[in-house]
Length: 181
Length: 181
DNA sequence: GAAGATACGGAGTTCTCACTCCGGTTGTCA
DNA sequence: TGACAACCGGAGTGAGAACTCCGTATCTTC
Image (cartoon, rainbow over all chains, first blue to last red; front, side, top):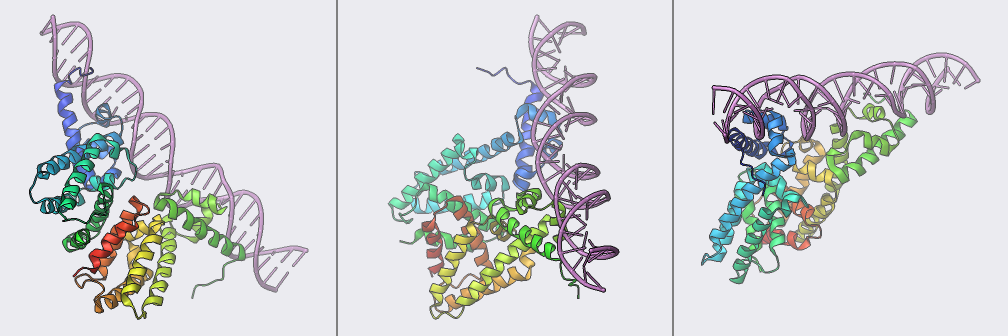
């Protein structure tokens, strides 16, 4: 349809912007000034806007990229023959990684952000739910929660982790709660 | 020392500003424009600054007021002869109330905000710890967490609650985790 | 290797917001 | 009740940040 093939320098700059944005958003979240990202990428502000219609759109692009990674990781675990372990491993890993990435924390915490509607985020939720249900089927996780609940709990765990880095034992409190019943 | 006794109108305006700020901050957090608060209080921006040196200071004043209430509530429960129930009741109540108050959520979530150093916030933590230790002494709460951990867990629970209103069953997951061991 | 399309940079524009300043008003006290 | 100090409102100021515009530079194609 509309793929006039980007010019070589344009393609290169787009990649640089994305990389700079990923790094900057991970540290400071959405509040980082766009001009800083441009400077970090060695590019003018105009160039950023040529590739992404708004700062928000750039943020989304970064977040979606990361969520897709999480989705892939979940799919790799989905056929594990120890669903309980698979679930807890995944949960723990996501918490640990995401808590060091402020962009992800903010995006997941958005109650009704458009990020959630993005196909990648939806896939994340779907995979998370699949992993959860398999673990519930073998009795490794309590039955009275669903995928949506789990997403909320992840948001909570991220808040804890951000508040008290190296809080593995606190996440364990939550995990123990999930095992119960 | 320095109490030249406020003039009657000044005293009235100060109270109005505080009330307006409490309401506005509870809904939108620190991000609400100060001019909005002034208008809500039926007062000019200058008047707000005459009573509080900065928007941040006003925010602190509001938060401290609320934290003191929590402190009082904790002290009322501290001599209960069912320390486990007292603890869980208090925990649940604080979560429910605070989750509807964005100012409190933001203040508690501040990793190293000066609010935390404020005497009221410190008293909150002390009372929380006392309640916790009594519950631990009778085996109602697992022994491997301390008051500081608990504050982190409260921050997490608040994030959950904000994300999924009416999430009583999710808080229960956390409480079950606290009972374990 | 030259023409023409495409992309670039960064100064400029516009908006929002915290905070200040001062001419006017109101409370207080003799 | 009058005079003085305390207090008030809100226009004004300056800083910061998102986004635009256009003269210039770079890539592509023939």
